[in-house]
Structure formats: C-alpha cells, structure tokens
Amino acid sequence: MKVKRAEKYGFCSGVRIADMKVKRFAAAGNTGAILGQVVHNERVVQEMEDLGVRTVEVLEAVSEPTIVFSAHGVPPSYHEQASALGLKILDTTCKFVYDIHWESKRALQAGHHLVFIGDPQHREVIGYTNDLDPASYHIVSTLHDVDAVDWSQFERVMVFYQTTLNAEDYETVVKAIEARGHDVRRGDTICYATKENQDAARALAMDASVGAIVVVGGKKSANTKHLWDICKDAKPSFLVQGADDLHAEWFHGVDTVGLTAGASTPDYVIDEVEEKLISFGERGQAAE
Ligand code: SF4
Image 1 (cartoon, rainbow, N blue to C red):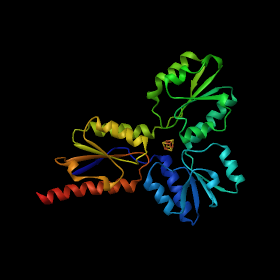
Image 2: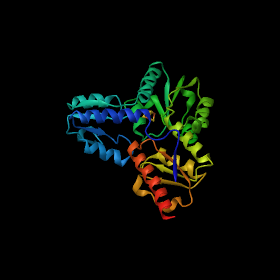
Image 3: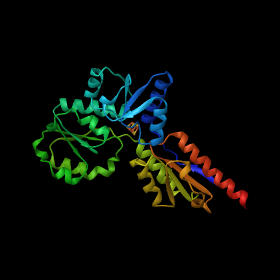
C-alpha cells in the first residue's frame, strides 16, 4: 500500500515558528507557562509540559518566571498585566495576527467602527476586542448578527476577518453590512494557510489513484474536522489522532491511501501515521 500526502497539510508557518521558539526557550534551560493551548493538540500540549512549559488558563496561575503568549495572540493589556505580576514574556504571536491588531488600531484612530467576522469565544478574537470600548466594535458571523445592528449610525466601518476563516463563506454577511452601512471597507488580513490545506485535501479527495484518506488531527481541532468533511464527501475517510487509532481492515483492497493533517498536527505524528499505513501494506503482502 502506498501513501500519498496532500500538497499542503499540518502546521502553518505561524504555529511552526511558535513551536520552534518555545522549544529553543526550553532547550536553554528555561521554564514557563503557556497561556491557553499552544495548538489544539493533546500531544503537543503534553510535549510542551514535558519540556517544562505547562499550559495555564489565567495569568494569575503562573508560578514560573516566564509567560508564553501563543500564536493566537493576546489583548495588549495582558502584556502590562504580566509585567505587573513580575513575569517575563515570550511572545510567539503570529505576524498575521499582529497585522490585524495594528490595522484595527489604525482604523479605530481614523474613526472607523470595527467589525470582526469570527467567533467571539476564539482567543484570537478576544485578543482583538478585549481591551476595546464595547461601543467601538461588533463581532458578527451570521446574517442574524448583521440584522441585530443599525449600521446606518456609523459613518465609517472597517471589516476584519479572523485569520483562519474562509472569506468566501462570509461573503453574504459582509455584503449585507456593505448594503446597510456607509463607507464600509474590508481589511485584507485573511491568512491563507488554512485554505491551502483545504484546497490540497480537496485535490486528494478528487485524485482517482487514492482509494481512502486518513486525516490526522486533535479531537478539538475545528480545521481538522473541516478537512475530514471535505474528504469524506468524496471517498472513505478516517479521522485519527495518531497511529494507534488506525485499523488495518479500513484499507482492505486499497492501493494508495491519501494522507492529510490539521493545522495543529505536528510532523512527527504524521510520520508515525504514515509508517503504520505502510506497515499495513507490508503485512498484507506477507500474508498473501
Ligand atoms: S494566522 Fe495563519 S499562519 Fe498565523 S497562526 Fe494563524 S493559521 Fe497560522
């Protein structure tokens, strides 16, 4: 049995850099705590903990000398709060997230009402909005949310997307704001890492030589689930957290298995899955 990997899969550049920064920090003998999961993957969280960098949910819970801010970013005030608590900061916020922090700040200063298309509970969106005057912004994701606001009261509106969203999915929502508001502009801050993984999964799903697909990712990872949805519409597809979840009987009669992974899946987990898939093929041949 052969394994064909998607053209793009796994960690995006932002998470890759954050992961590297934390590992270098730990390798230098430092200990710290990460505010919120570095990525939604239990193995990565455990790996960080083993390196001496545990996960905490609030700044006050940090007893180590350093707090690590993850790639999702934090509200600017968290930097001041951490300093006030005597903590050093290792900031691994992704540059695309910082772009939105800076652009939204500029837009606010220029008199725009801010709109964030995204999930109000997502840490990235909390980072943008937590410190703002509630009257200065709205977070919307549905037409129902758009209907709940009188857009004509704002002279100027600037729309930002949570980085990992697919802008096309929210086109009708943004068009509805544009139809009802004055001078509505869009910030060009979408990160294409997620879309690239999805496009590559779609290509794998359409590949006639691929008989089944394995999608690797964490239980809580929304983008992994999305990849699985794309794949399973086209052919038998299996969502696993790692090599231990694979079953040989899933691949009976399959010559080539497609392999992709969510943005929170580290390379070594993908390698383990690939090795096990190849071993299924070898065992099958030996039995013939
Ligand atoms: S903005 Fe894009 S590159 Fe940065 S962490 Fe998020 S998905 Fe990764």
